Length: 295
Image (tube, rainbow, N blue to C red; front, side, top):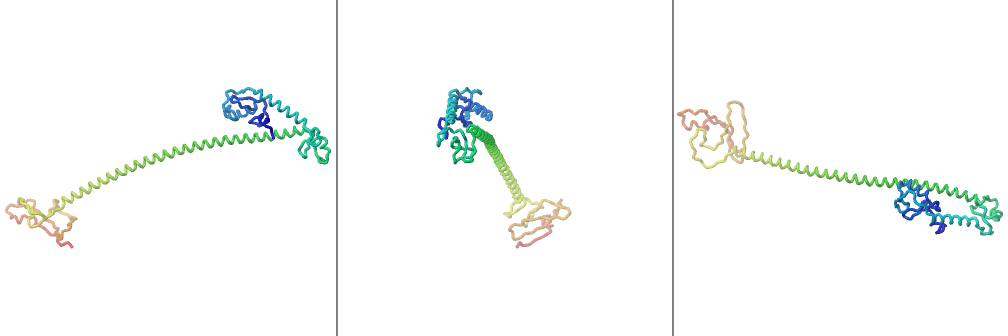
């Protein structure tokens, strides 16, 4: 487990001991190469921790931190070189490949490590360091891919939000137009309905007036001048149209009367002088076409 001091001396980007640490204006420190790579990928000079934009592309070297890291590494290497075997109090100069642990020369000859393979501890350390470095590079590549995918996902999410807002605005505009169309259509149809009502009312009014030109009812006898075309003995309606030839028909509404008569009369165009009043009356020349009692 790493000590608190070792954690404080680790770069937040690579998680390793600082190499050429530089300090930003926000007081955060990073390895120079780690910060350059971060800025190259992000395209902005922002702090990997607080996102503050750096005012310079060449931040100054953190000499105090650099000295602390070098002193820590030197002390750690000295402790590693001076490490002693817990069983034999001898220096750990060998590394058992089978047990994957450092041993002394006495451990190599013990029964516990019979037929085991050994390497000098420095050689084994370089080999393990190389493997760790390769693993770290792989993890860095995966982290890079993850960050790229995250950026694309964020961009896609933002694009989706823009599309949703645009679609929502379009839907509202369409419904607004539809509502306006329905209002105008309603006004047009109501106006047409009222116009039709007015036309039909006018037509009915004209029909009623026409029926009132074409009907007659009984009443008291009026004192009128003598006229050869007037009927005296009965109540008649005399049409104004005349025909000299051909076949003609009429539709007559008799209403609620119980008795009706329908006929035609011939009226002399120029009454002769000396003809008596009774002989000049149209009813004397009337031809009864139909006469009967309504059931």
